[in-house]
Length: 337
Image (cartoon, rainbow, N blue to C red):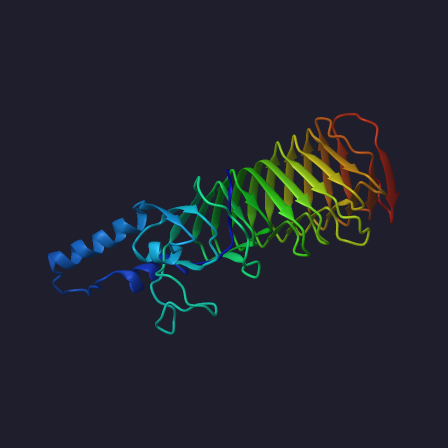
């Protein structure tokens, strides 16, 4: 049984140096004696950063913030949670308090696991909140339904298993690994958005987008690997953005994954690279199914199924290694085969 979670999470880790400088109980200077009890207290503090402390809470009566304040970093959750959480490796923000990003939150924790329990009814009663991961924090989600977007920035890491999510974005060297889960998007934010070296791996994930933006977008040196998954774009608006967009030195690997779009294409351009290995790409209405433009590269390997492809621009590239018959339309000097 999955449980629903609606909360705001901020992961805010600037650097290990900042962690040590601002959070160790004691600091020492050169050529000065260090007391044994102070050194031991520092070591105990560091050990606590990596220790797993697990607690089951009922959000109808308990409080996630209080549990984190008490030193717990693995919460098994029953009930509806709508709290704002701060996950950070530095103790205080620059104003000397726990206040950050416009809200007051819990004592910082650098890594957090949120796991759905077996009791309670989950209901998203606070849809205005959004879940965010910022600055190298680590969040593990297990058997949960998260009702708001997850934003990963500056090296943040997200691990998800057996859960239901909405929008996920990864940027600035952040990474996400999502397994055995669903991504369901109904708004204009897009389902998956990667930029600025953001990365993502999906395995056995069903992605469904009925919103008015990309189902999957990769830009500015981002990359994604998707295996054994299903991607459905059910949007009926032909003016909405592409089902999948890969551009600006980004790459997408699709392996044994089926992509279905209602009115929108899969596009690859501006040094983007799309590699298909098994699976299929289908467009229900209109054409093209796949569009390669500018300096985009599309590589078809091991019999992916698609009806047609359009190449736009003399540097667009289409490589078909399986020998299947595909309708190719060239324009603006393109010479795809």
